[in-house]
Length: 445
Image (cartoon, rainbow, N blue to C red; front, side):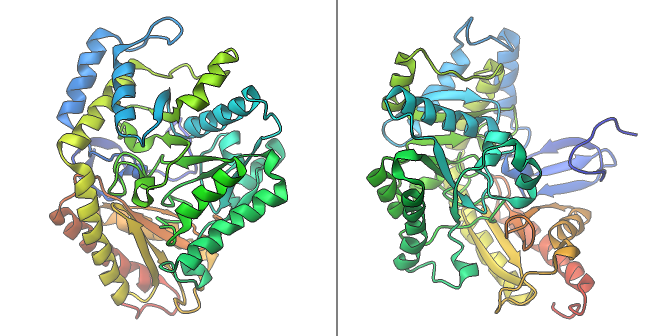
């Protein structure tokens, strides 16, 4: 019997230990962590240098409240973080996770508007589908019906624009006209809302769980930046999943040379070694807020020295081991392997991603882009089959969280070609078993 509860009643084996890209349960069975947990464990498990840094900090202090002390660990991590940001982003606010970081970014943006005489700006536009966190504020900008509907009466939902799903919409993602098409939907929404009421636009540079590693079409990011500038709208880049090297650049937005006004980070920021997140903003956003009495916001564990020591060591390991470059190189190889599987399994309708943030999407009819019947719950079933085969992958539903099934394959940034071979073999075996279970589709191998 367990006294814990999470999302459902399902039980899993008990974790015993984890090293590198592998995890073992208490029965001695080994699993390859093909999703880095929930796209968190970017540097792999049990990195000795990170553990040593945490032990050293634990011997000094595990907690120091920010109103009582500054800490060397938090200052060190802030400096390391700023050094990896686009020019001008030089002020850091630490939190414990991604939902807290999104809340913090929106509240900083709002307080800046109030402090600078633009109190009429409060609407934060986001995309649908999208996922930005599970707190009520983060859910308000999340476009994922299965998660938001139960709580709709409890929150003030924010405006949404369509995510740039060129593949599903039958458009060419390589055509700049496609990028402009989706970006111009943002401008149309800003005009509908009234530009004087719109505070910010928040997006993931590469889609995460809600859209399955969706890469924006050509021209999209530059046009979004242009539209935000034209209407005085802040651009908040949700790099919770894409940041810390996951896409083959330290920040996902670097692939399109797009300057954010606020960067939101978590997940790979401390890579699962401690709860940690943060936002990074420029002086011109922060100083007016501090001049008006300070940032009316905070969390007890903000800037926790143990978490920050872990985060600083993680950033050191990413740099010293060349993990960003490895993510770019291994990502290309992984995408090629996934495309080879797609050529063999007709049920795979699309393969996409950037670096080691990759996914494939199931279709019952890839030509018509018809999803599998929702009652089959393919996104859950395939993950369980893979798990039974010793491979951990991650899944969600592509179409507002209610149908469409995609599988995220996102191993740690230390993955080698041998690991990719093992992942590919595990996917192949699992796809064979999965397609055999599908009604009237057992011959799709």
